Image (tube, rainbow, N blue to C red; front, top):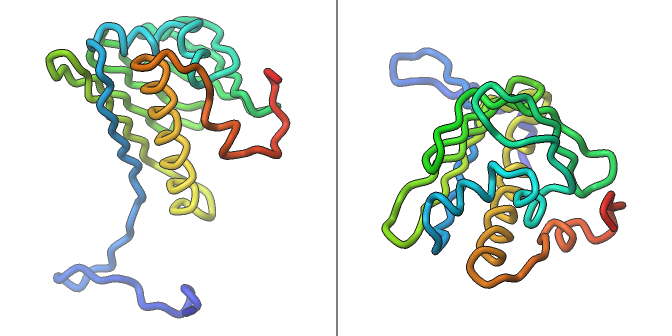
Length: 167
């Protein structure tokens, strides 16, 4: 394996150095109407059926809510920059990182697209990979619940040895 500190900096054809910022893009087709899928994210009781342990309030433009995740001690404050019912949730994590959830009408289904950018820290690529993994499971849990009535959170199985706040 090559030591990344010895690798040359990538160059643009112009000769300028290029830096890469990881982006998370996750999609899942949910076979329910956009209104139902959107409400499942925006409503504090419904979001806890497939993702969170607790949400302090609904996701409405200008709201600031606290999300308590199922893993014990994991809490985040989220600002709702814009909420367009049945179409968009534009959020900011407490560190300012954007999280955008789009709901695309596909007739009797909804394509949910989650995009997260601006990963900081010493390991932005690793942080993005972990985030992508998490959001993939969130959408799979959402699909199982809305389409098949199966409540469960796949995060329990991703982290079987973790301490959970709701178990």
